[in-house]
Length: 152
Image 1 (cartoon, rainbow, N blue to C red):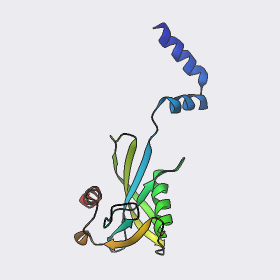
Image 2: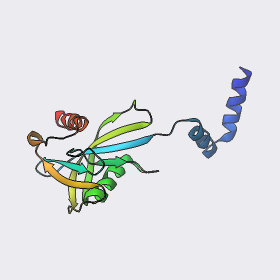
Image 3: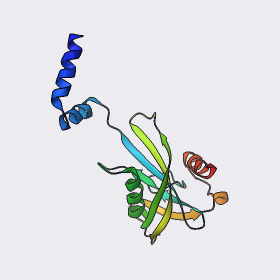
Image 4: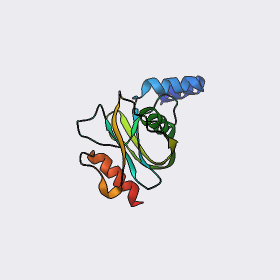
């Protein structure tokens, strides 16, 4: 009991930024992966073939959040960098936790501009597909995310 009071007293003395630093040092660090079901004006889904994925795979666009970045901004930035497209994030679709040090967040968004300009270091191909014409090689977890987006 005495030790608990001492800890509470120290905690209250730290105040503000020092409390945040203490929390940061005391807890695990996570990476946050962000993906998006991005639709064009015909309700087709943007899928990518990524350099770092298994050959022949297709998947949703996305990437990892950077320091102090809102997750919606992560998706917009990744799409702009990888494809040249501009998107508007419409809604949060899901959050999945339980991985060792990773959290996954998926959104639904719409294409609002830009011209296709692939980043050759990361993206092999980018195409829009109708929901009933999804390609072979679509990552199973991404197929599930698409199904969730269209079930709402």
